[in-house]
Amino acid sequence: MSLFKQLEAEGLSFSYEERDIFTNLTFSIPNNQSLLLLGPSGSGKSTLAFCLNKLYPEAVDGILKGSLLFGSKKLDDFIQGELNQKIGIVFQDPESQFCMLTVEEEVVFGLENFNVPRMEMEAKIEAALAMVGLQDEKKSTIHTLSGGQKQKLALACVLALEPEVIILDEPTANLDPQSSTELAETIARLKKERPFTLIVIEHKLDDWVELIDRCLVLDSNGMILFDGSPRQCFGEFAPFLQKEGIWLPKVVDAGIAAKNAGLYKGERLPLRHHELLAGLENSAAFLKKNNRTVPKGDPILEVKDLYARGHLKNINFRIHKGEMTAVVGANGSGKTTLSKCVSGLLPLTQGQILFLGRPLLKWKEKELFKRLGYVFQNPEHQFITDCVHEEIGFGLEDQAAIPAILEKMGLKKEAAAHPFSLSQGQKRRLSVATMLVHEQDLLILDEPTFGQDANTAHEIMEVLNEKSGSVFMITHDMELVDQYADTVHVLDKGELIFSGTPESLWGNLEIIQQARLKLPFRKRLQNDLVRREIHVAT
Image (cartoon, rainbow, N blue to C red):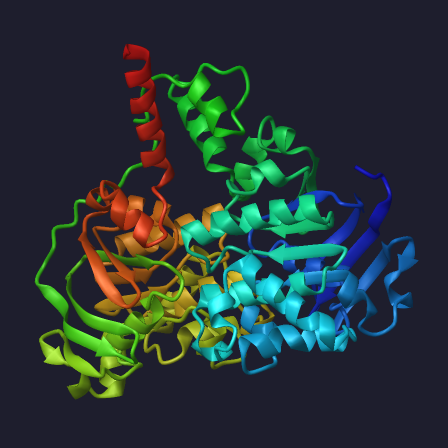
């Protein structure tokens, strides 16, 4: 690898609305290096990424101090737009970077801005869409795409420009499990074909470990906690990351749990799956499993012969009182559409939904939303006040409950902040908190742990787990399904192809493959241990 310093930061600090986002960061990134930028929710990772390609402080009223160079040239010396071609970024919220109507037009827009000749455009568009699997959506309007498909489009727009640096801000947050793995494989292949510098901000780390050269870790105060190799970061430094609430690769987590249980004999913590297997005794009992014992009550919601918007076909299921239900499936399978139908936000083409024994259409809106809450996939879609405290308290008769929920959701320090000034992870926690305080009979959540660090994700799920009402959540995270769900429904191309317990789903590999899911880590490890025992026996 070349030692040419492509990006250099010295004493870099950024403040916004009188709050320090990160402080005194000094680091350099060599040409073609693959760097993993880690940190707890709200530590300033996304803000730093925006500073690296000059989006901040130009796009916000923030203050940037210190020195920041690209190729030994100060960022301020680049003319407007010049740096954006050299440093491409895929935002955590892909919708915020779209400005055209169709998929093809969006990719063309970037190419036109940088004066790519017309005769070269078609090949670049086709290649970029093929890399992310959106060839069939070329003529589609962007608003009809699922959240995961929008994420893929944002990446395609960046790839088409062939930048020298690519920054991915939680690129797999809205992707189904197989698409997440395929994205990491695509990036790895592209780096071999056309080397570039890669900066990845991510919570789901397992697919990226093989690709990463270095880890740069920020702490909760926005200062550098660690800078070094993945082996050292996820080895001897792992306990410090855990304390900060930073996600670890599942293999490392399992190694720590096995070591604490006296079942791991390796000299150092494993970083790769084969290392874990080599040092592990024949037991995966140390891994957390769903132990919910909440008895199912009467049906609280019934979906009968539901058809909607040309996406959903003949959907039938029930949600029982006290039940935690998960809906999973590939990007574009109809999960969000189903959740909006169930919450009364989208009309049905055919069929009926009963909530508490009464047709959903016969509920008055104000009365319905006292009993049923909905957390949008994009949290900004539901904010209506100017500060976090007011947002949680809006429409709440008993304001005394607000401090406890602020504390529980890790938002106490942000109580006076504007909701739109929060990090994406903090926005998600606020959107969940605004619903939890009302204690509805049914809470519907679209990706409840999106953008969360390990500690805050655990807090959100534990609060939902303890909730007396029912929970209906859409998720791509099979670990959440495995650990918390009582019932899981699988959608594929608008049809319900499976309903049952998570454990019964893990035994149906045909459904897993069809719906582009992956087994949770616990089951994969158990299967590998069984295969190892069979191999030893034979």
